[in-house]
Amino acid sequence: MLVHVRVTTGARKESLVERPKSVHVSVREKPVEGAANDRVTELLAKHYKCAKKQVRLIGGHTRPSKLFEIMSS
Image (cartoon, rainbow, N blue to C red; front, side):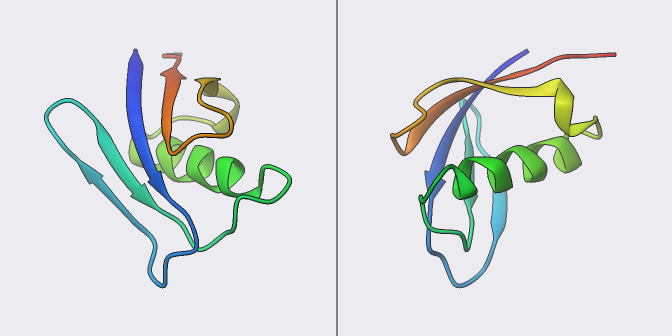
């Protein structure tokens, strides 16, 4: 399953809100050395109840709009 994600970094409070066509995620981490992407991956894995290794960032590594693949087991 492909998921379009809009990320806000450096937020005071972490959140994950599912919208009709995308997921909006706010994380506390700054976009330094992939820390924010790693945290988004963890939150998506928790939300979709799968292992972190089943969530893969496909596109948008350095942008706020990202594309993730959630692999089913």
